Image (cartoon, rainbow, N blue to C red; front, side, top):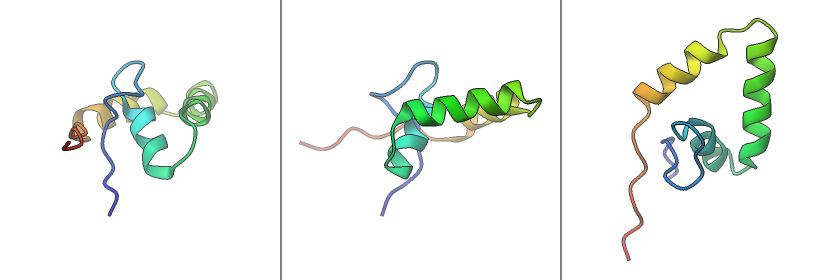
Length: 64
């Protein structure tokens, strides 16, 4: 079962968009563009991003 968490490998700031992209099995660029669109259209995207950065757990490394 997939678990939503911040990405360790696909991150620009905190790894929130990368983690959401991995969870949804899509490209992180699309998630980042959607986030940018929400922020520029007057949404509270920045607040939601930093709340997610505080709430979401870090991804665990795969056991080898």
